[in-house]
Amino acid sequence: MRPTFDQIRTAAYERWQRRGGAHGSDRDDWLAAEKHGRFTANYRLAAAHRLDPEPPRTIGASARNRCRFCGHAAPRTGLTTGAPIFPEALGPGGPVALDQCEECASLFAETIEPGLSRFLLAGPSSGLPGIGVDAFKGLVKLALAIMPAADLDDHEETVEWISNPDHDFDLNVFRDLTCAVHRRRCAEQPMPASSLDGSPRA
View 1 (cartoon, rainbow, N blue to C red):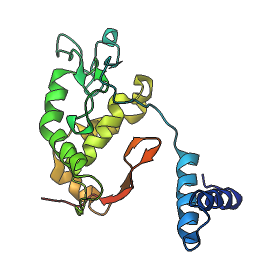
View 2 (cartoon, rainbow, N blue to C red; view 1 turned 180 degrees about the vertical axis):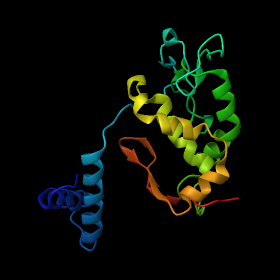
View 3 (cartoon, rainbow, N blue to C red; view 1 turned 180 degrees about the horizontal axis):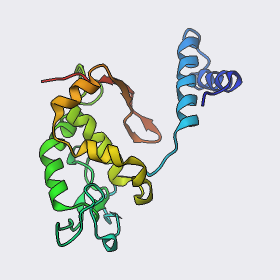
View 4 (cartoon, one colour; view 1 turned 45 degrees about the vertical axis):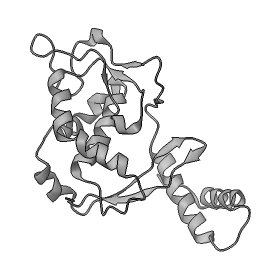
């Protein structure tokens, strides 16, 4: 779905007003309004969690008794007893997982979380040429980790993809991919967006 001309015009005007009515950025206001309109028309918020240190919130019911990533259950695998979902690079606190197995947690800790932490610590103004595949997988894994369990069935191939440690194969698929990653400390203090690509990086 695409926003209508009138919707874009209204949103661009509101952006212009928020900037104090200064002239010279009308094209930027229009493009930003169109981009935001396309996003809000086609996506919905599935889950939101704050990084609060106390008390730790849990995601996943232990009664479900199977891993949300590999689908294995006891006695084949043991579930974690509240492993942190967000990497330490995002700060203290955040929800903990009850429906991730120790094997998947170990795999992610070894193959994607170090790259994700490096990316998060670097920030959007670091001048890095792109986001590594491991960091990209880490961002997708975070989304899947907090997604309502009922929605996971719609993302089986994505779950399988992040569990594949063969990043070299992924580089061939995502070599020319571009994306925008938005980071915010809170709703009142947005951080600038950073356009990043999926090209390999040392």
